[in-house]
Length: 418
Image (cartoon, rainbow, N blue to C red; front, side):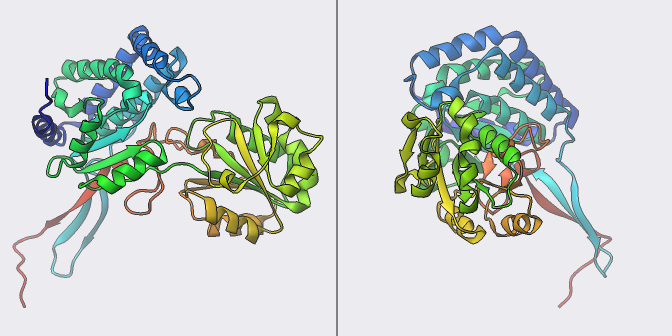
């Protein structure tokens, strides 16, 4: 049966208007109810997810993003409950002032209205966007990836049940068909959808940016670097690099390139020892290759080619680049970075200060793993995505980033002359 997209978008628009006038506690309760349903229907979700996984190439890096486990579902539910417990930004006064004529002006946060999202094989995003939109009084229209169709449908059924239990219009959350036609309909929903957010690989983000007729907030691919400085601490570096690379290789905050000062090439083998235990393939430039030869498994050590820099591996693979100075490290990062997350390991305060000032990225770390680029780790409960653009939102997007604002001007009969 042909989908009536206009009817779906009109219903979402009406639901969004109603949400904006719904008490915050009722919206929070809907999120808590949904989290509870995820916990009590874990087996149903896992069965749907198993069917999705069975249809996917097991060698695909998307498998890890798609895969749900009881622990991951529990973590998703916990994130939802965290969002429900956060203060709502809706109606918050950002600034207020009085003009000489006595009128007062308030800048107040308000929902976008209807938020669209396009994502790949990430069923956790379904729960995240529901929670964040509900908490901020936005309706949500989601186009999930075909790889996660069954998982998303199982989740959507539970989310709709939660809305029904709380007396909220089910159109507040709309899961579109997983076919390609739905993307085009969403990206052209002018007058119905206020903003669309793509979450996935570089190809998906580029497609949405190039074809959308509604405003786009980009969540970029993560090409992530860590620079081990001449003054870097070996133990800190070893821990930070291993965690950033191996904690979860399929996520956008995973490390892709280690940049190391040539003065510390003698420590490169020690820095990489934990990576060998995780069977990480290293693509090393000539100096780094020489430093690792005989000290890193030969089957996992490959001379680097140009193509290895600027690649988001999403796998147990890492490029290594040696440099002679902080300036050279910054130049390499500037050339290949996706402006997502970048880190320095150093005990030199001046080097750390220069790095944080000069690196152009949404999140910049000093002696900390880039694995922390995550809305939950930032205290946001969950995230819509990691924005790498510079307008409206940058970095992990939590509740405030799903609002815009209006000016409310009050007075006592003032009129303008001249």
